[in-house]
Length: 306
Image (tube, rainbow, N blue to C red; front, top):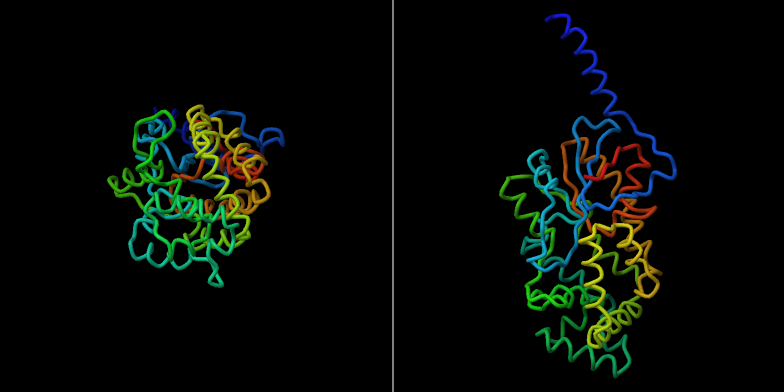
């Protein structure tokens, strides 16, 4: 019996070392070909695997389904890391402190940025949503856009259901399991991103989004298409859609997507070396040559679809 252990132990030691080694992908293997929103990260010195979960920030509650692999992984990690720490985002003091960062600098208001007709249109929409003037008119237009998009009293196209976010559902599960929570960037940093895009451009995108929603060929259709891609777990198509020239975001794709992806990689590496972690970020950040999956593979991690 002893001789079997003699041969087995070196094999186990070798396998343990080999599995944690840096992985080299061929250039044509960096881009994820698999359709998946859930990935296992190993190798490159990691003692235990971590995981990557592509989320969607707005989804009907009755369409949210946690992947089985994600449910199993929650039992094997010590931390869940979001784009922004959900503990920070659900803290009322933090929320109040961020409100000042949501306001445009220089005392600018929507009225300063828009033609009279467009301003009257947005003002009417704000009244419909119960967003009074004053502070809300001073908000950065992109932040105001998220408030319109995140209205949970609305309905998804063709679906009678309240909306939720995958992040919030996952955060609740993590809290029940007493897991740590963390963020790859701060809420203050995300707010600062809005300052990188001219207010006039933000205001124009806000008007276009609202008008397209009214005409029935805009944000509702885009949300329906994005939800369909998400259900199909087509992360590359989601990345392409976000950077589509017709979306008005193509010019700012580096600011909103690519630069952030690159900034996350060293933070993810540090978190994974500290403890097994599940990363939950928008699925649109995963695909493409500049996506998180490709960037992690480029750094020497083994990234496998589950």
